[in-house]
Length: 446
Image 1 (cartoon, rainbow, N blue to C red):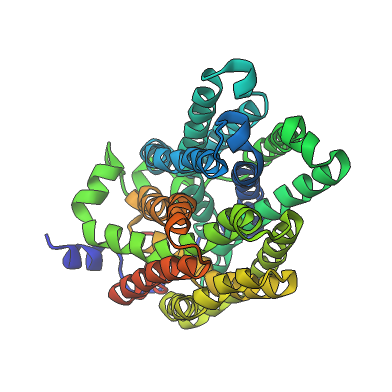
Image 2: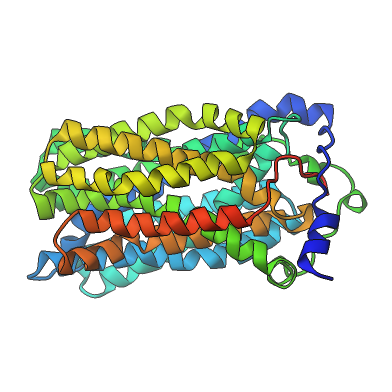
């Protein structure tokens, strides 16, 4: 059976039936719980990204060359992204066969153990080569955990959503990465202010990691008390059976949608990680911009982007996913060069303004994608399909972005090269979204 015919059968273009009344009643609480969990997970990831930019290179990869140390730290950042596909297989199988809630709780616990473990690690001066080995091992565990987070969080919210509001509810967890970054900055900046930069580089960098213990306990409590998705609420015979190996079925049955879905999200991933992670290292080290200035600029931009998530999702529910995502892709292609070019000014207000516009355009892509990617696949493969497309896009566009950017700037010492790199990936996203169908009216129960 061709992919087109199968899509027509599995993803009917009729309005989705209403979820049960209980699901509608619980939808806001489920969306809030998904947001809390996603915020915690991305706090953990943001803390590592910021620490990699600031201190982890010298602490775990000492070298006479600061670029080499930073590159090594960003390699561990990328390593977690390489482990994410393992999480897609593991948690996608759990989520499609046993339920969304169970997969989300397990992934949260795994992330908490790995993040707190990083905060307790000995450095290279204390443990020698064992220190970076343990750091990489814990980063791989973080990556496995993240491979199961996004798909489950957006699905749990979307599958509880009232009719005509699926993009809004699915987008709520999308605020989590931005809030996670803001929360990490809210911990890191005061810590640096209280103990000083030398003490932060020496030992206080551990504080944000260890504080994750409290957040994970809260997240675990919240997630164990929410209702399972309506897809799994009834008897097993009432829902489409998931295959034994969902990823294999996904690759075999929907290869086109899988590849195009990855491409649709790759540009936004690059923009986000270049602004939120790489610029925090690049600005101070290459351009002499104060560290606090870069953190403040990125934080203001993240706050503005978080504020527009729900309005953007409402628009996507009204006019469709594709028009909004396409507008964000076109805007990003046009804006990334002046946005990263603003770094050459060294002016905090100009950089903050440019980053703010850039992340708002990014959110036009990123907000609706939470409904768009799951809607590309039938219920029996939806956890795996949503996770695989988003995680692979995040790995290719985001995980390697700091690494690629570091290499590019070692050859072409201009912030404009960052814009050229991000812009090329946004063009790929633009082309892939154009090749995909509108999904707003697809039957989400099929």
